[in-house]
Length: 168
Ligand SMILES: Cc1cc2nc3c(=O)[nH]c(=O)nc-3n(C[C@H](O)[C@H](O)[C@H](O)COP(=O)(O)O)c2cc1C
Image (cartoon, rainbow, N blue to C red; front, side, top):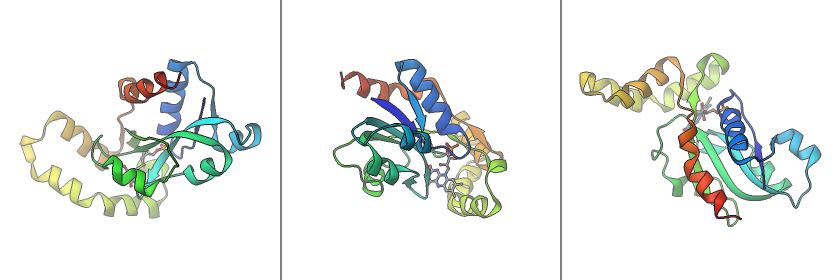
């Protein structure tokens, strides 16, 4: 199995490289993979979430044998329910994982930044309303929504690494 990824602002790329190093797997950016790999190649696909959709997943499913897909988003783990993720990102017979990446407002265009601002308004307001009752995690998430930040962490890969072990 190889890792194929797409990344706009770098968080998914970081996870793909981390996982590739940890599991000694090859990793390819999607367009490079489409040039170099055959249709039968078994692939773990990783891509950034945009409005609940894993970017690049449709091309990956058309081009390779996708065995699992992983969406990388900005919200804390557990917030996009995985069943809603798999409904929005249909991959035949493959599990869908979620990893919290981060948010890099300076690397996205103004229109997308506005979309993110609108989509995260209620989350921001709920966190702001908590005031001094915010936990350190909640504070970090609020800071990320307001200024950008990264939640990329090696330990987040554990569920995917466990799944890979079962693949033999
Ligand atoms: C237009 C837009 C829409 C987004 N939609 C979502 C979303 O639905 N869910 C989510 O968790 N993150 C969403 N994000 C945040 C990105 O998925 C997040 O920043 C991710 O880590 C980017 O990965 P990348 O650096 O590999 O491109 C969105 C970001 C943008 C710019």
